[in-house]
Amino acid sequence: MLARYQPLAFAADPALAEVVRRSVGDDEEHFAVVVKDLAAGRGVALAADRVFYAASLFKTWVMLAAYHQREAGLLDFGERYTVSDYYGEFRLNPGELAVCDQVTIGEALRRALGVTDNVAANLLLDRVGAGNVNAALSSLGLGSSGLAEDGSLPTTAADMALLLEAIGRRQTVGEAAGDEMLSLLATEALADRLPALLPEGTRVAHKTGTWEKATHDAGIVFSPGATYVIVVLTDFGFQEDGASRIARLSRAVYDYYNGD
Image (tube, rainbow, N blue to C red; front, side):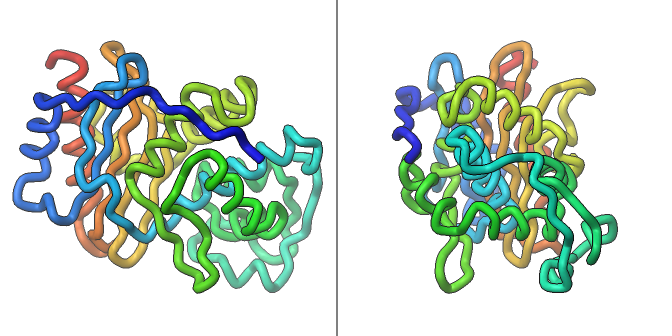
């Protein structure tokens, strides 16, 4: 079991809350937002406990469980698997693993987090076990997120912010593993949301999620003025323009912390 994470005390920042509300404007009912400075704990929580479909955010949960099992000596990232017809059915996008491809656990993690490969993610999920993923989330302190028996993937902005804060402060399964997880999250190839409007070179360790009625991004921004968690969940579908709304909100928060 993972030790329960004790988060930084949260202090509401009214000025930042105004920045967030001004950015989302009349679309506030579609958003849940958590922003938290990892030095002082100041931030904003907007509809933080509203439950959304996680979409590909679940891949961060699988990553957590995989590292936990590796640290416990239960999983070797060098294990090699061949993609079967069963896993090939999870292929949704060009470039994902195909039937008969071979992949190690470490490579599957890089693909699941970097190019959001659904074949790799589901192979990993079966290897670490859905029950173990849920146990890891629960023990860390995520109370509303997990892999439900009916196939749903509930999560909240509060839960995702807690997970990212724990990873960012290297208080999940050790400092080295925390560094590795941040490095994986920083390889996310889809950059149309949190990083899209930030200054070139800004490091963002994040994971996107996209589905019907789900356009999300959750990450940590390493900026000159602050290192902060920012989670933005929306109920905009993949055919709607949720990404640009998240990008504008992300830039507004960046400017607030960096005095622009």
